[in-house]
Length: 457
Ligand code: GDG
Image (cartoon, rainbow, N blue to C red; front, side, top):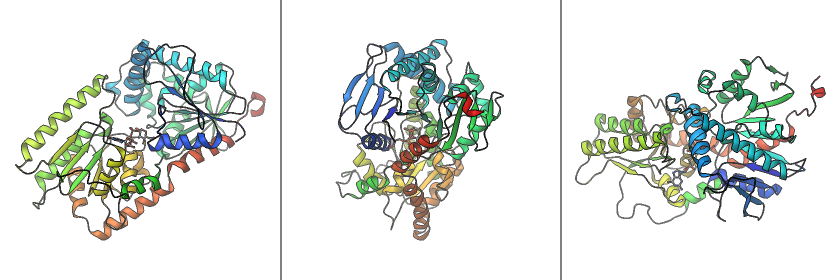
């Protein structure tokens, strides 16, 4: 790569410590090429074309400010009350308001002006996620001709669902301004190509890329992963027992940002059904860690209330004086502690109703002791299920299915646990996060890019 790498994501690490798989992967990619990472400052401020330096070594981290109104209309509004529910098949939760879409366009246009000021002709631009769908279109309008890649962390919507948008026809047009559209799974790619196929403005090139006007865009899957070796090492480290004196015995673990896409109510109900139908009397507990997320959005307040209610019912019905079957923690847990919890768990429950990939599934597998591993119960609707076919796959809408999977995981033979874990671990190792960023950037650097219309003739 001759130029620098410029990464744009909604969140950027603010302090010196860079933690979390995605943050670390982008940090490493930037440190290697010497680049710039641009993201939104977590605190609202003066919304102008300025950037604030958050860190300089070994690459620049720059933050732009959103105004209070933009925080509300762009971030909580269009990004998280229109696009997030739409992309997670919850059209019923979409809140269409003209001021939301206007703020989204304004923020993307402002960011395009900012990037135009700093991008050199050979810099690669890598845009992350649904907060910046129209950024390439704005950059092109501002005259930026650089290679621009886009990675969508969430599921690609079905063609019919896009009609929920006020201007569905803009979606394909804006995506086509990126040279490379990276998606999590092969099914996401199929849905994206279906959208282009249905659009009379799009044509398919012999190599499968899409010609849209005078642009060509490649659509490929790049399943995201974690820092597998690093996470395994963290989980293996002997540390204090995370439970202290309150050891729960056999437990199943759930770890999710509290989000309606993660299927938490059905998970709790599936666990209750397991308790109701189990044939042995051995106790098992469900430990659910669900730190709050997007609390100002009404749909998140509603799911929080619903979960508290179900958790209360389950414990009211099944708890004993010396046993709490459902432990629900609505606060974040430190990462090192989380890694140790994964390793001690007999099973991990991932019941997303829709999920781009689901890194928790990968973290759990990486953290296991391969000689005595726990079992991953994984929703068919998480992107991770496309390759991790040896997990216990469940239909998260079917409570009976979740209950049976819990029973099966807890009673599984040692041999079968080892075989399933080895197969899942192979996937987690093969698709780790360093490989993900290297493959994406390699493809962005080499995908077809005619800069002039005449190149297409
Ligand atoms: C989006 C897509 C896609 C959770 N609770 C705590 C905690 N976590 C960490 C987990 C994991 C991360 O948060 C969650 O990642 P997921 O992938 O499961 O889900 P999203 O946040 O929805 O991420 C998703 C991902 O982007 C990447 O492309 O896989 O589909 O929706 O790393 O461990 N971490 C700590 N304490 C907690 O309490 N420290």
